Image (cartoon, rainbow, N blue to C red):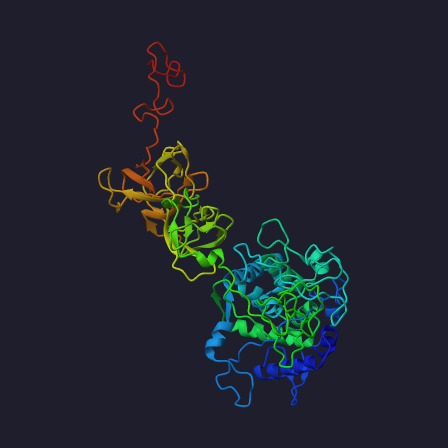
Length: 600
């Protein structure tokens, strides 16, 4: 830290702040920080070549240009804090510090989700973004952002003119920082314009890349940290990523301390009510107490040790006066005026499995007097044991209310799991009661079944039917795919009891079964039953197939002995078996009547 604090702000106060930060980190045992017996850092957090040689952006390659940052540390969570420790905070304050403004928290979590898909090998935890956001801007000045995540006024660091800070001449013609002479760090994550030019992202889908929008800034910070194929689950690579953001060992230690703190548990607080840090690395007051990020400079004041006039009364980290005037209470945000949610004409939520719901959930944000409130973020959440989702496959969606105060959830797509679940609507940034809507997914149906084959279904006793039963299910004339069906060999047309004799199916073990319950039609509605077999009972039997939705088809099966072969007429012997009668006109052969022998 000492190496860079000299560049940020000259004076003994810098050394005092640095010493206090190292002592505090030694007491709190921040992750990645190892100290020797004198409290000096031993390993794990040294600036790396990666941190200073990225070749992109200014200020030694850091995303922030190594601008000032907040040095406040999280409360200790040790159950038995050291009596000699000067760092200690009541539990109530610790709980407050763990609160992150709702919209800011949503931005961090959305960025983590996006990076999980775009760069799964990075393993970016949203708590790291929260730690950097805390150190850089006090979570966007305690969550002073509108419904879209944009700060109500720009968060600007001091001009980087080399006068106690890094020297970075203007790179954006004042487009982001309003300064056409020198660059300044901008927004909740304090990007310098030259870095934002290539690292900026559109995190809220509005088509713009705005460093003063917490969704855009959080996503950009995530991509910045994940570059160079880093795996942030590896401590050394996480350290390198943080140092590339602000190349200071003390900065690294402070961020890691907040990271560990947030990993132990956080909670959502209303926008605008976040805890504001007060100590800045660029502060020069003897006490080391810097300005609150929400306290603007007093017009015309030029307190000792602050940046030269032209900083514009910036409310960014470390840029306020030593003794700021008490700011006036800002007007309430639209979100803060919301008293309750009202239904806005949501219809009955029912759909067949695999189909879209025909209606959408719509709610209206209202004041206590019943007036509609526009530009308020409403969160819709699917709750329950279901695979149904909003369009796009998500189980949560955030929508900003329109000019009539109405927010309409995206279309619901029913999954394959039938039953009832809940769609819950709540106001982002307020602890108000929400509205719950019951949604029901019914099973796929068929209203008609027909045979698709014409093979005669006959068999001899103890034999196997030559053909298999083939069917097609339809619903309102269209193929009914993925419809559940049951096939049962019944006793008669009037008695649906399972027959105990006649044709049968075989299970996987070759045992006789006469009811099949786990049948499902194919996507085109077709269904082919397993092979049928016959026992020794002859006669005509019935196979009944039914589907969800009431479609029924009965098929006749015949078991009869084989017809005997038709032989030749046994009463008519062949010519070889019956000698012909001698002709009366025939003379005896000479051999039978020797010539002259019969005449005496």
